[in-house]
Amino acid sequence: MVYGPQGSTLHYSVNIIGIYKTEGTIYYKGKKFQYQEERYSSWQDGTNAFMVDGKKKTVNIYNFNDEKKDTYLSKFKFDPKDYIFSYSKEGNYYLLNAKVRNSKFFGIKELTAKVYQANLYPVSLSIKLGFIKTTVKITNFRSGNILDSQFIFPKNKFENYSFTDHRNEK
Image (cartoon, rainbow, N blue to C red):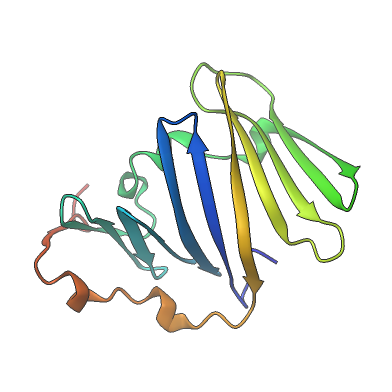
């Protein structure tokens, strides 16, 4: 189970036609979320969200539910009501497909998750954005035994970063 009370973690890598290339590790547990990439990282404990930009040496603090906390990802909101779902089998895998009902110029057009049939662990996620299609490779998936301490922001690691607190903004 990717989203659940026991939590999960995975490593991902993506290359969008050479324009954007990154890899990182994600941890989930209930509403809590934490990821780390070379430049960006985030700790979200269910109440607060700490968004770190390693290149700019900045930490922005938001309320957990504030959509402004991640300006890039907020452009790609996924609402299940906007998609038609299907699945098929391919060898030892299930292909879980979500295709947008009403296509827009910008945003996610189609998603295909490839998961092992035996344990339902994810292998990859293909994403079609307009005319661009990319695949996120998923490795080192592990479900369970994710500690709550994983989601606590390690402030001492970022002592020489500038902090901006957005929690009281409207």
